[in-house]
Image 1 (cartoon, helix red, strand yellow):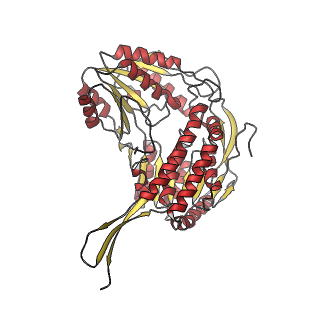
Image 2 (cartoon, rainbow, N blue to C red):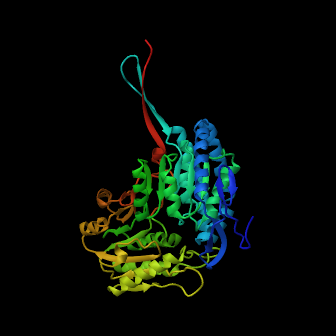
Image 3 (cartoon, helix red, strand yellow):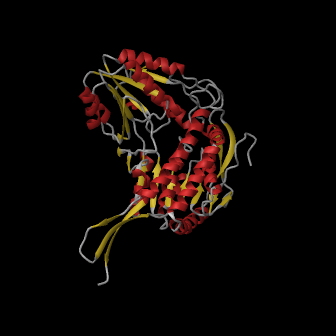
Length: 482
């Protein structure tokens, strides 16, 4: 069933059934390109959450006992369905989140490959036999941790949920996932792929609701054995503390404020083009988005000119319109934040070379923005903008630039541009980040780990490390009968 806007009717998925929720409470879903309400998301009650938890506990017993080959076959079938449905999932994603249709469709296809990767990697979650005393068999086993409670934001409506779902299910866990109430239908369509692929009831449960209420309820439940979260640093700290109170492990992929260091021997034009492309992807609403541009003084003029040209070439509009290369921000909150950060920087002496304001049209559109002469005490230099704003700051000494890059409590992503192997190794050694890209601004890939240091969280998603949080290591010492 769809609404008049061609948007699906959103439902919870609990114990293998699509449902409205216990009280019928809902919240509006808004198209950020038009500010029109396109649907309603049901909000789970405590009773709904308890049903989801009970279903996950029962589903875990079924799923963990399912042979890995059978689990892998179901997950590959779900990935195949998602690939087939990518165009429609992308259209839904654009309606509720705003990103251009091409980006949204590519995201749906990409996360199908993430699922395939994790499903195959689960077949290699090896234990080992340890040489020991005669008559004793000493082994290490890897077992699924149990039911997972997961929480994901709105910026990647397919990528966020799939990272958690694919790793949990591949490891043999069940999951209750609370996806964003602002982008619920994409998550619903992902779940539909698993249901249609034959996933047993209760293994995957999808809920929406008041975030604080849902997280408190799920984390406190003794049925939950792992908490997995992607989102802001303040919320991540709160959820990690709640998990710690009940001695539950947690996986935290939190925000950052990614520095870009353009060294004196780099190509400023190539660096600016690559950095601008990454900056304006998803309207800058990416936790690894480059957000502080530290450019050697000998290159800063050419770098800035190229960056401004790239910013002004961005085609801002409704993500469903052909030719759009950057959609709206996801909500009014982001607009308010960007207006505040820009105004603060300008009040402290920054210059706006292009953009710097909301576009005069319906929707949450903010112009691609480039600032120079940004003082160190501007909020923009210490607060993640999570939007299409690029502050460019010159430096003279690489050690000083590294100090600026590492000065913040965040350490998710960092970027460097240099043609020197020695300088590249210095960046690798000195930059405090869990993800580092050199001579490009690469995004996350499913075959390699992603995650942060310092306040940007702990644990890794992607690569062979992705399953670590979802598996427990059991040492078994077996004294054989004489």
